[in-house]
Amino acid sequence: MMDKVDRILIDEQKLMNRIEELGKQITEDYQGKELVIISILKGAVIFASDLVKAIKLPLVMDFMAVSSYGSSTKSSGVVRILKDLDEEIEGRDVLIVEDIVDTGLTLNYLVENLLSRKPASLKICCCLDKPSRRLVPVKVDYIGFSIPDEFVIGYGLDYAEKYRNLPFIGVLSKDVYKK
Ligand code: 5GP
Image (cartoon, rainbow, N blue to C red; front, side):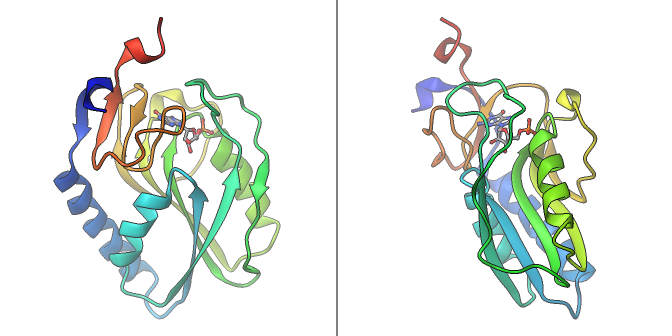
């Protein structure tokens, strides 16, 4: 697998340290409240699993699946719900946990969709942010790391469904998709 990694962008230790900080911040911000954590399948699952352990509050976890890149490295801009929530979120404090915000199209759609269900509050926590690629504005409340415009894999992020199990964030070697 390592031969497909051009270089390591964020190593495991850095990820864990930042997640501890994010967890502390979220714990403080939601004191006395109960959270609904909505993690977006499949990319955000590994980040969400580590993040919830760093949040010292009562919470429930739910999942949504939306269409994204498929096996290409370019966003289609089309967002479809493939799996909806099990929980009702009306009147509840909701935190979306996402792997990466790139063009912003996915989160923009999700926010609109979830707001229509009338949660008490709705915030976003993203492991990674690629600000230079934004097409639509999205307010991300908690960001793990800002990264340059490169296609990354690992720590939940895939290329053609593989590499999610790499314990770090790495840059995908260009010769994997530029033949
Ligand atoms: P957006 O709608 O913001 O353009 O894209 C969000 C989704 O695109 C992410 O949830 C992720 O699945 C995918 N994505 C965006 N950039 C990358 C990347 O660098 N690597 C991988 N593996 N997926 C990405």
